[in-house]
Image (cartoon, rainbow, N blue to C red; front, side):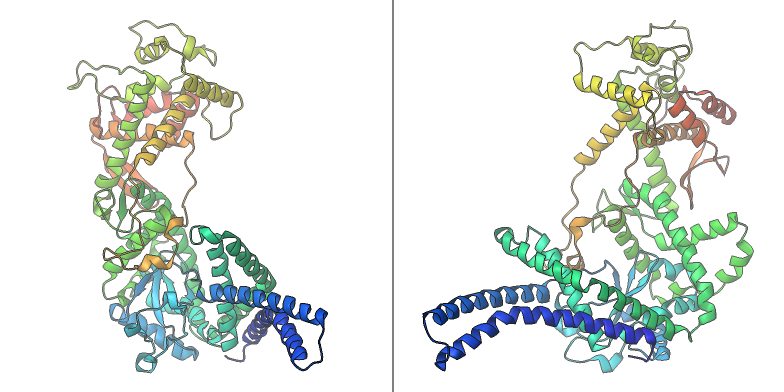
Length: 619
């Protein structure tokens, strides 16, 4: 370890953690020491008599129980598997240039090279200790991939694994990646110090022991023992929490200080790209990837999509000239032998982490290329949502608006949705359920009249309760609640229908094992907690209804006005009308959903030549 101030502070904190471990060991051995003194006194005829004999028996029994408990706790702490981040491992033969860059960087920093490299679908990089036996490779593979021949020892190397955010490889240039990784790689120096390594192993073991004790499924017959182990582990963790945090800060400070001499000027520019990559990655996941995941498709080139999204962002912000020269340099993904294969593996891992998808492809979980995204995802999403909307309208008893001139006169139409959501003029809040039937000749009045005149044969308690709740929400509106009773009822039914579909979906296969029954890579992390990082909270009823109405409008535009489904790299699914994206649809849909006012949307449909009375094709 170097002479940096942070390194010395980290070592001092590591010694404090080890002293806590030593005190815990002393407390466990104290009854045994007392028992030894009493037994020795009895054998030397110094401590004799009935009282001393009883004390020897009691203290010896207590010492034996304490030693047994301490041994069990120590065994659990030592054998419990620490948490490991889900990553895509990169072998040296798959990225020799990347390994060479990291090796050269470690040599310039005068620190040990990381033992391996892995990628994570996130905009971050760090070092991860995987020296626990549960994380190690098979015996014939125990070698240091970066250290070369010198790493061929009989024991596993203690160097940590370098985890790199996959978006960095595609967006950053080679020089920028080297500058960003410099302070990360420099952390292997303090990490190699025996005191810091021992303190980290102790803290990680305690954390793993707490998780093991909290998992009731692992020890259902020993819950009292698990509770005791967890209590002791949590007590020790609380005792060394502050020291461990300060130790990690010292390690980071020492690594930053050591890396200042390596590409410092480039690192300032690269840090700007880190923030830009994070913004583009977040936008790509939430706006582009998430709709595909919900449709059972996972984009297989997410990292390449980051480049397209950030390029589009720079174009919109009029930064294209500054980025044009930068994009002409060699991208860091060229350091991989097969960047497409790595991108696909990282994309599948991202789908699992952020959405909870299966580990393998199947009929309901298939990859999709960006060129196929409009047809495979956007078109299917809109038509699926439109079909769900009309199923709910059928369940509510809303009659279809027939079109005698259409090939399918009773087919699903946009007019049916518009007429149902339109608030009738000069009515109270409950006029939807008490209004008389309008004249048959009134345009758009047939669905409302049918809906209002259909009286159930028997009272529907659940439906009445739902309508009452919706009316109460209408009297006390908030930004997530539809404002009209009819809209609120439709939104609630849509939410319930979507929940039923999700509940009826077949469960994903249990990951973590290969077809041969052997443990796979997923066995190193808890797959039961997927998705580990949900991207968005569940959509509100108002958002669901707005999405379904938008989907119906887009279906009508595609089937009656020649519009096409498209992909916007920053906003996801887009409606392309005349080769240009329609950007003014959302406020008109909200006007219909929230206020029951169809006039802005009808004017928009008329301007684009979209005929709402024509049936559309659904899935």
